[in-house]
Length: 254
Image (cartoon, rainbow, N blue to C red; front, side, top):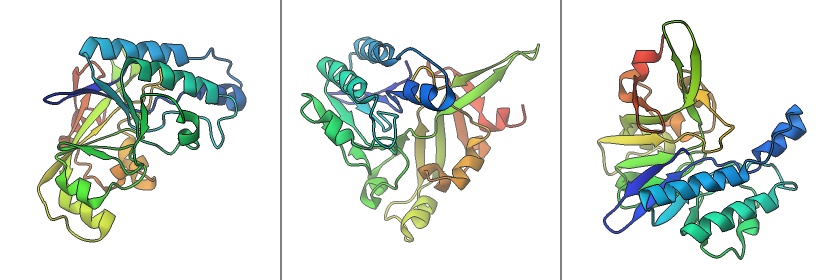
């Protein structure tokens, strides 16, 4: 399972992104690929991480569900997922671009809270999906932004040329001032550097986008990453188990 722990003084918050419950529906309907439901596998993975870390709550950073525009086939699976996770630990959902009708689906499920789409600030950590701009006040207060949306992955190749693509975590150091100017057309009251952590997709069938392609895709897309500085020396790449792969500059021409 692909998640990180946010350890605070009295809380241990498990952060996940892009669970995309019901992704198998699109594989079947659009691509003609029949895959068994992965929802129970997702549930098991989240529960295992909660137990492993002793997490006191879980936050999903958007794209909880996958099916668009209306979850006709997957709504019950989404409800099953939310009920199972919330039974284990309080669950906060930050809506992403795939989360149409999420309020209606989650309605009445005990232990589930839906946060604003623009994100939430916990201590000095700003948590959101990444497809909309956060509030200027939250961005000014944050030391670190944690987001999803982009599904980063890294290609690892051995000396024989054998290659695998693995989900990855990115840690980007960027200018807060430039982001504020681009997003709000005015400077932030607080300057300095900002850390941006991008989590991989949690769905087991989604590997992600090669990190070498993300800067160009971000420049063309609707994402917070459009406004960060893509200095390859300031982009660290980790596997989900926190193995340090290297800097983007190390692999950009590999």
